[in-house]
Amino acid sequence: MTDKKYLQSGNSKEKNMKQSIMSKTVVVTLTAMICCALWGSAFPCVKIGYKLFSIGNNDPFSQILFAGIRFFIAGVFTVLIGSFIEKRPLLPNRKSAGKIVVLSMFQTIIQYLFFYIGLSHTTGVKASILDGASVFIALFVSGIIFRIEKITPAKIIGSLIGFIGVILINLTGLDFQFELTGEGFILLSAIGYALSSVFMKRYSSDTSPVLLSGWQFIFGGAVMTIVGLIFGGTLKITSVKALFMLLYLALLSAVAYSLWSVLLKYNPVSKVTVFGFLNPVFGSVFSVIFLDETEAFGISAFVSMILVSVGIYIVNRRETVWKDKKYS
Image (cartoon, rainbow, N blue to C red; front, side, top):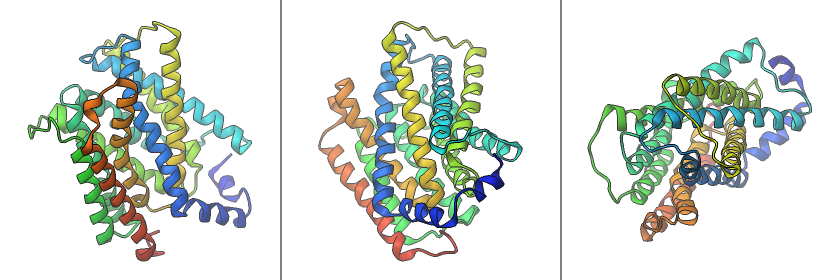
């Protein structure tokens, strides 16, 4: 089905109703929190997956291979589920193919290639903090470069408060050393994610966001798989439990990114991306539950959660007051 047909499908009343529902703060909040909880669970599950597939901490290309296969399967899940829900095959055409390649380059390939390589040259603490910078980058790109929304004092203040919360939960072990292949690559990963959010916002105006999410995963996952194999990455299937973990990681990516892309379609970028500050918070919670990393969760985590929540509240509360049709 072409993009034009996609625009013409359904009547305008149904579209306006869906937009109204998906733009409600309570719906955005609950949906974004589900996404962040799923992504947060990926932190310990990826570590468990590495152990189940016998992937070492200093083997980035096996990690990239693992991620590539995960995202390829995630793309297949997304396309199949989306096709079932929309009662039509979600197949790309010539116009959407270019959008898929651009999205895949930023959202999957650049983000995760740089993230996995960078993570092997820095600490998880600094990676979480630098990754949180993607909220500011997305705000800057959408407001100043693409001018698709208005940058308000409330958005800046709310983002700063949330970022302080991310720093607080990762304060232990923080140092200020900087290495291009470590912290530099993590920052490039954050830039890739921020740009992908803005492009998803633009592209989903006339193309199904679920179609875009699914096929960018398939393309990006295939590229990462090839890169991992070329540079010597290996993946050993040791048990049924290992396969189950891989499928879970693929499914959580499919569900989370599909829901996230729908939120971006109907809301300003900042209103959605600010929830990204919750990822390391949920990651800490699930690390305690599944990895027994009790040192990752204490009073600082509770204060961090409060700061992140306050930041999200400020951005979303003031969004209604500052809303300008020109930018929303």
